[in-house]
Length: 329
Image (cartoon, rainbow, N blue to C red):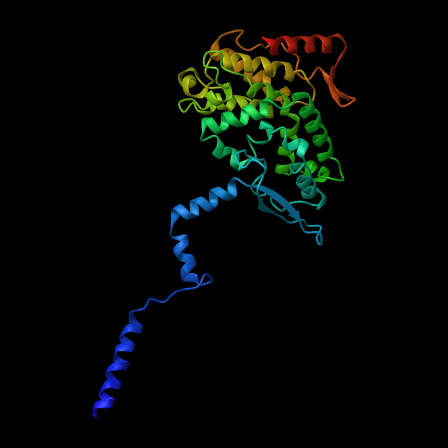
């Protein structure tokens, strides 16, 4: 081989060696690049957390009466605060007007300003994560408890009536659609949950709700806050009382006193759950700890000039005065 060709041969050999050592760079659309991100759990967790802390907007398919809807992440004014129905509402709707109504009321500023705990306890994924922090939960309650209870009660009661109208979600409500039924119960349970969740432990000055939610040794303390939804406390044998029955303290006594007042109101889910729960508490904590002397559903609740009034002759007035005194105590 002549000398010029020898130089060319060695030059090409060097080029080939260098090329084989250079790593292949994948573009963003390359599957291997996506797989590298998926394999990093800290990134995946961050993305999931970011989605859970965003409010969802429901979008309906206008071209099909068999309505489908999805959740589109949307930032709120305060991303630290949880929002209700922030995952998926499913697709089981007979009319597209129903998910549209959810979109409307969930984005309503008057509704949002209430930060209603009654709509977060059972139907908010982001609230579940808020409960992991006592500080974050306390911050939420500070804001929720500073809202006007009379104004929010009026707003949410009106939304409950609108929800079950035939033009909105009436058909789904009659068929027992769980999201619609839950939303209705959540809306009408706002006032008792407001008063119960805003109570404070006189010994610690903490919210009673936070003490209950952080009690890892007795989950029944947290169960007390589901009684306004119509879920009665479960009765247990004496041998298992300590871990399955709420702690007999001032918070429980004051909370049951709140529930007693609203159990008198016709239409409140407490009509079904108060007396069974009060019997469980009385049996565990001693006679008189929870008042059993109440006629549930005896007081009719009507709307007058946007304000809710409890009526029922002398019984209604007596209940109203009794409820005011109970809350004051």
